[in-house]
Image (cartoon, rainbow, N blue to C red):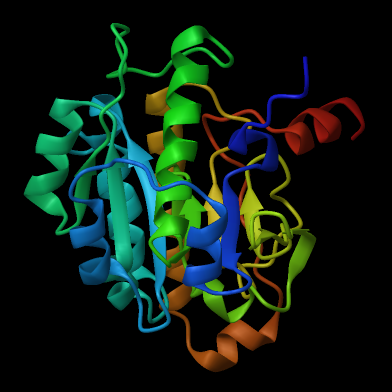
Length: 267
């Protein structure tokens, strides 16, 4: 049996764009379902036809949870609040969809044909997890079929600066899937940081922060809020203060990281 590709193998960020244009992509791929998606995307896409996609279940979408923190980061970020209008939040259960509609203008209910509970986090590579991943992949394929590029982002991420300024120049790895007519770009962790490697990351260069190396929803929420607190303190500085020295992120309080372990065992 061949290797089963899952998007999580590539990390929390991936930018996929059409190489030969929507007509070429539609010729090479079959049309599929996802009722209402074709009508929704024109209201979400940027002028160049790019959509930011994230996904939530009920636990992530409920008031005060990850979706609220994710959205807040756009408002306190550096000139990126307008990008919220280009975010498509894909809800994987009905309660998540209901929560999303109360706070966000562009929500889409992904119909997953499963008897399993998708409202809470599913164990990595469990049957429910794999089924959900493949359903998300089908939706992403449909977005491409309809002629749109998309940037997929996990919801346990805070946005601080515009990542599109760096998509074309800061590429960790790039694959051109010529048979499908798409290009896949993975973003550089120097600007798209995470809790696994945090101490050396420069706040002056950061575009996003991801709660990887972190288990438990409450732990993620606590440390993401701390990141936004540090960001607010940083952005309150004068330009002269910001350039006076390098400002780096503090270690997460609740989430364990590789760096913290290394420094505690090798002082």
